Length: 308
Image 1 (cartoon, rainbow, N blue to C red):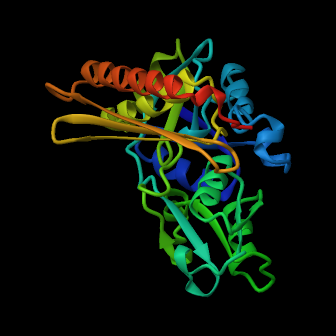
Image 2 (cartoon, rainbow, N blue to C red):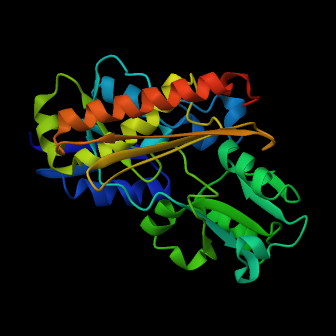
């Protein structure tokens, strides 16, 4: 292979994270910008469908042989396999937590009653309403700098916005963070902070070129989290949080489902004891803990919660 064509969205964040990841691919690479539905349609994600709005155009370009590899924020990736496409690598995850970016350096508990807090995520909105029912949660869209300006710019019209810490870190905008939100109160979206690399499933050369970027522990944890989404028949914009980690010889998973208004939530936590950290065992562990978590949540009434 002469040049590996790497497709990505054209946002500043997508380009930054793809360029950094592509440095780990074998051989020479060319970054190819692709416009997705989510980049041009500013309607709320739940309204335009959520699942696939940031990935479909990339996958179409891949299957049309316009690029050899595509890179996604893994939390945007639909859970169902796509015919002809292989998940060739999952890069080591950045810090998965959410970050509050508020005016005047305010922390979350310092926000005044009725403060306007912006987010485009139904999961974050439900969590904000659950923890602080007094807040005015405002639906916003736009790139990272556009969102930050809503709370910290000269024409700010919000008191704070909530964004993924991983994205801010990749853009070098940690200076905007006024508080990193704890996983205890604000568990994050399935696969948040991880990057997914897809190739055509019959393209052995491209698969080999990206293999070094694969991190088996991150892949297993992201798989466990995404299997919760699949088991609950939910898309990537659903108000569902899932966090998995491998620690002390075990794979731990905690999953939470929210009513969209934050009035109710259900949580399940499970663990799997590992004999090692081989890919096959980690994959089996991910399926096991996710299956048990889904069964517990369904039995508790997760499918009856108003998630839309």
